Image (tube, rainbow, N blue to C red):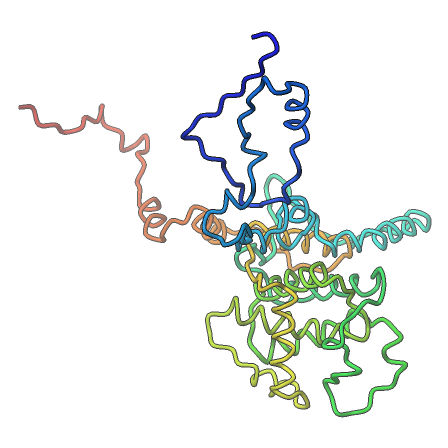
Length: 361
């Protein structure tokens, strides 16, 4: 009433601490009210004006320990901008390929060239053409072609030549043969990248899903470490991503010495050191959500369609339709057999009105 300023604080109320503590700022608003009220006002301390040491909940001398999730997930804005962590963020390789795709379409339009194959099969009401690749079981050869094409666009349309010594092939060569310096000045072709990755997957007997996870780890490394994949480091970066993806995704035990048998001139110590640096740069974040995996799969299919990569299309058969339905609905084969054994009445066998038997009590 009048010049009296009152402030009520529930005695039992305890200030709530957020999981992410920010540096305490001076409460200028409380100081202004105290100066205006003078000696006639008794101001109760507000929760925001309390000393951080008084709010310590056992963390020791007013220092708030950072939560594990705060270290792994910096903030929502950075998370949404990272395509390897957030399903709504656009993949980096698809963005880097758009420049070349637009240029190809422009040249095709100017030169009146058909952008695709004239024998491309299209689905109709009577026939549906499908390839043998699904999100749960991708085709190995096609997936490796798409992943290596994504790596090719990463190298070709890179922003700079930022790199680390652990991935530099000049400091850590993969072969004992002398590689000319001119080799590191030119971008590798797509077929050369494909041969390198195909050799690894064929010798280690890896699956197509592992290739997609490899691309996820590669883009996560480029984002977290803020480096670029270039002619001097692309082999070791791809090798580290394949090594990590095979250990995370494959159910079988994978040893670094197995890759030393594929690449004869590399040592186990070098593989161990590269794997350790790779994990540290990823901040040990090797999780790949199903939504992120599906996004990369469909973006790879879009990349293949933009670059006219061939797919083995075939008409949809009855057996494959049943298999796709069984996979999508997670039903068993016995349910399909039971549905196929149902009989229907024809006009010849129709006798009167069929009545169901019932027991009356």
